[in-house]
Amino acid sequence: MAAVSATALAFTLAGLVGATGAQAAPQAGAAGQASRAADVVQRATGTADIARSTAGAGGATAQVPKPGGNVVVTAPATASGSVAVTAANGSTVTLALPATTGAAGVTTAEGTTVYPGAARGTDLAVQATTDGGARALVTLKDSSASTEQRFDLGLPDNTRLVPAKGGYDIVQNGASGAAFSMGHIDAPWAKDATGKSLHTGYRLDGNTLVQSIETDKNTAFPVVADPKWTWGWVTGTVYFNKNETGHVAADSAFLGVVFAAAPPPFDVYGILNAANISRVAWNAQNDNQCVEIKIPTFQAYEYSGGYCN
Image 1 (cartoon, rainbow, N blue to C red):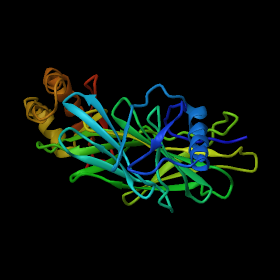
Image 2: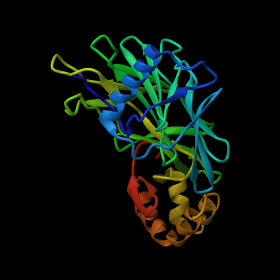
Image 3: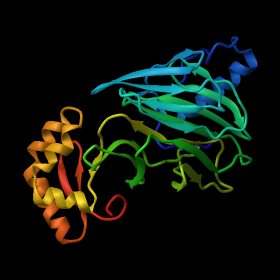
Image 4: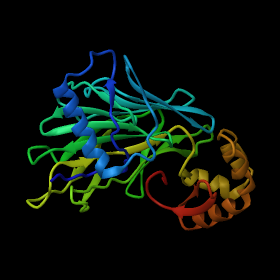
């Protein structure tokens, strides 16, 4: 049997469309490897939220409509490349696959691109999702595969990661100084082939996202693991540091400046909730903490650490 570990993924194989990029059609052996690699992921996850991708010379691309414009998700033509999620304004978050070979990608009819044999004992896969995100799946085929996977992140300027719900908010400074969560890296999950959940988690090593998966002698291989992330619109949380919290506490009109740059409807709702946000900011200032606003409810809370400095 096999074991599967992943963070958030879904798909089932309905047949191979062809190689990603301008490549010759794979031979039966290669097609069989790709089909098996995709099937392992599919059986562990399903296909409900995969965005259809179109294979081309530069990789497999999906365009997902979101407020403010399309988000474009690109899976690289080979495993040595990077997955990219690009917002309508052109800003991009990239994630390099943990490959040691340049295995060619093959895109399934459902939109999953697989890279068989991308590293020792390891297959990789990429999916665009209907929420404008991407999944980078790692299948550990046997015990020879590394249980620590490293994904180098490429973030836009003035962007940082803030721990949130077992994953990370991708936070970008706004023109007013407040930090908008413009995307999110979901908390990881892991399962083996019997459906048993495996312990897995993230840590950051500089700009590298490191996922560790715990296996033992009872683990049924292969194991599938994948970071999922979104990028390109205000989602999750707006963070204020101590200085900005003081501005919000003293003058709720400051929020008009903060949310003026946010895409609709966040600009309007932020201003409508200004009085309550200002009240929470006043309490946070007295507690030597900061204020954060949860989207889309626009409820304000006190917090400490992270961006609160």
